[in-house]
Amino acid sequence: MRAVVCRELGSLDNVVVEERPDPCAGPGQVVVGVRAAGVNFVDGLMCQGRYQMRPAAPYGPGGEMAGDVLSVGEGVTRVQVGERVMAMTGFGAFAEQVLVPAGSLEPVPAELSYGQAASFIQSYSTAWFTLARRAALCEDEWLLVLGAGGGVGLAAVDVGVALGAHVVAAASSAEKLERARALGAEAAVAYEQEDLKTRARELSGGGVDVVVDPVGGRHSEPALRATKRFGRFCVIGFAAGPIASIPLNQVLLNNRTVVGVDWGAWAFSDPGASRELLAEILDMAANGRLHPAEPTARPLEDAGAVMAGLLERSVNGKVVLVP
Ligand SMILES: NC(=O)c1ccc[n+]([C@@H]2O[C@H](COP(=O)([O-])OP(=O)(O)OC[C@H]3O[C@@H](n4cnc5c(N)ncnc54)[C@H](OP(=O)(O)O)[C@@H]3O)[C@@H](O)[C@H]2O)c1
Image 1: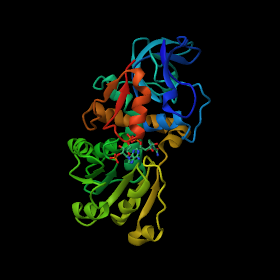
Image 2: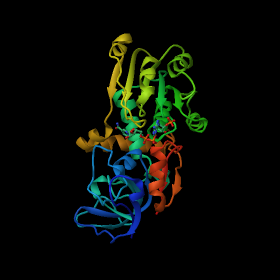
Image 3: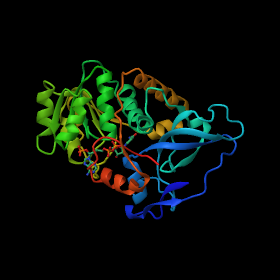
């Protein structure tokens, strides 16, 4: 089979497509024929050796995918050959085939394409875990989403609308803001040109209730300052690079709360609860209450270029690799 391999951590030029032996399902394992593999920001960080988890190279990148069950190992009853399935794999999803523990597979709802399913789990689970569980976003509250044209950002806009909130999208380009508006954001801030704190306060009629921040850097503090009393500021990621240091008086003022979000660690430590969460949001997507967009499809050979695009901020929405 053909598979993307990161030969050495560092430059994304080390990411190539190679011929590899087909995987074989051992007890409790399943071989999935990958139809689409979602590319996430962390995939690029990992190949560059900049993520907290540093795999030993050479290794196969690719953390989530959707496809068809090709074969099952001894004792597997959960899925059958031919079934449409999706999973977080951690590694190895940028390939024609991937070996997955049967317990981590979920059926793909008939209403979702392979591309939608392959780019759903990380972004939407993070957004739902953040807004429904950690920040307890309520109907009619105001939600400010930074990086609203990115993976987590777009999912947060969609989840915010589904929970009945008024969403203000903030992003760097008109195209990204347009995408967020199409998902239901009521207002938009072009945060590289406009004053984020002032505009978010104006647009929300005095201040937002909740901030989703997967971006970090210089936008975090003005976003926190844009929250009104009892505001919740959700720390999700640092795509911009620098980790903001925020004066604690800004947390004291207005009785604000800073909410840490580590969906990955939570999902790993409590797989049962994580599956329940995923089942809940997949059901919402199947019933039209969530609207994961059809991602852009690119070939395996473009893996390095797509990861570079995410790290350089030029990708709008989600991208999947299609073997
Ligand atoms: N805590 C958790 O549980 C969790 C779960 C999933 C992901 N994450 C983290 O969340 C972050 C975002 O992930 P994602 O999948 O949404 O990524 P993404 O699709 O690449 O979106 C990130 C957004 O960040 C913005 N950004 C601002 N400055 C940037 C820069 N210098 N370089 C790159 N992007 C920049 C971009 O929007 P603009 O161009 O509009 O500014 C971009 O759309 C990552 O750090 C990821 O590791 C955390």
